[in-house]
Amino acid sequence: MDAYEHITVNSSLEPIGAEVSGVDLSQALSSEVIEEIHAAWLKHHVLFFHDQDMSPQAQVQFSANFGELDQYKFMQSVDETPYVIPIIKEADAKMNFGGGWHTDSSYQAIPPKATVLYAVEVPEEGGDTLFANATAAFEALSDGMKENLLRWQCVFSPKLVHGSSGFYKGKEAEKNLGSSYGGDESFAETEVLHPLIRTHAETGAKSIYCGMAHTVNIDGWSRDDSLPIFRYLTDHLTQDQFVTRFKWRQGSLAMWDNRCVFHYALNDYHGHRRHMHRVTIKGEKPA
Image (tube, rainbow, N blue to C red; front, side):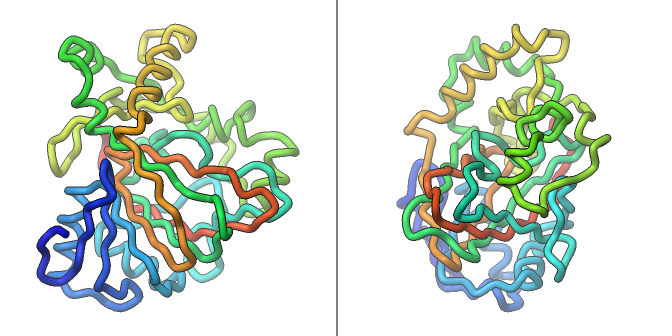
């Protein structure tokens, strides 16, 4: 157990993440509690809370303690607030939202620094989320590899997933993702440049940032030439030594740092319903 005055932090989940208890996130939090949660989050990259009772408004109130909230462009929000989107896989759906290793919305010019995900309804078995430590994965690379990777910028775009030829286009995907899925078709084709290796704005640590879902190519390279690099880095950072598997319960909440964490929502609960609420917190331009 890590030593904190106002919260209890169990860091035995290694290699990434910690469980926090002793706090009711649905209530207004003191500045001291917020500071301790923020410190634990920077240290462990992902925080997990269980047995929370969070309305959409309460989730927004909690999330806003850590920065300005963002609005997601490809999913309709819940009625109560524009900052909470429902992520639902119905029992008869085959495709899930968030499958595959990625960092959230890294294709934005200013991507979100944090995601706060709350479990409204989860299956009895399955539906876990994998989290990978992209900082530790970068640190484990050879010096020569690091030196090369640090030189490269990459083209990021939502088009690989949300564009006219993206993974989520077509009748089958639209049927599986539900009526809330949609969005700005012109934005779905946009491109931005971000570094392949990102430097954390608060800690200064460097992390792998490119991913198969949102990174089109290394700037100046073809996609075919870039893919072996992306595949190698994805395979590297998703080794067991960098990954924690989190089992959700109804009322669980996870808060992760998109600047240094990749995640993967497992799709292994066909025939069962899973209902989550997601908030994202604005970050800064990757450097």
